[in-house]
Image (cartoon, rainbow, N blue to C red; front, side):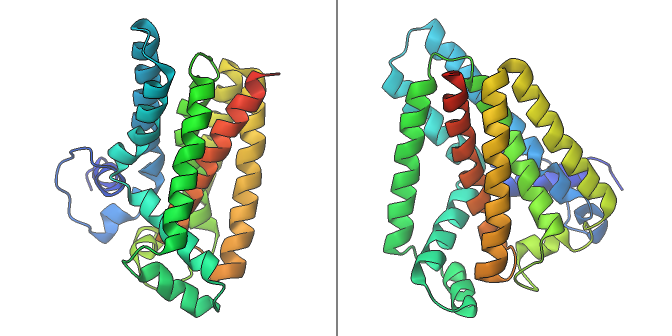
Length: 253
């Protein structure tokens, strides 16, 4: 097996970045999910580069924040926002579990999905505006890796709500102690790196990210009987909102 094949599969699935074509063979899929955090490095790097350019050329705060909000959407093709909106529709339906899972599979976006999406983007815009001139934004860049590390950890440790679906394809042969250990170590490394760049922001981000993961684990098992690809996207966006909030709170300490 080409050691890069699982990496190419993860990048091509969870981003729009060009990669070599790779067959979705079981051997390649075994570790592909573990490379999801790599996508976060590209998003975080683009954000830090954008902040540097804006500060160097004295770009207005509103423009910086607007582009910062859409950068993750552009680089991922909106795959996680799609899951966020589908999960929002399901949660707001207050229907039985099986009906919620059916709602998530529906390709149409309901009113609640649109409301949650608009609210999420507006909150992101406000938080990025407040972080424009702050070094705490570096913790946000690392947070894109942290959110995907925790998402992968959830996919590996929590039950699948469906027997089929993309998530089950990725995790079918990946649920082993080695993969889980790697995600734990990576998450801890991200937390340590954030604290290195900005101690208080790193601490606040780590705390809020851990709370979001605990809440997501509880919610997904209670509402859906486990995780799906859609709930994974929901968590990534929720965690990244917590990362932004934690970076801002810590920046004032």
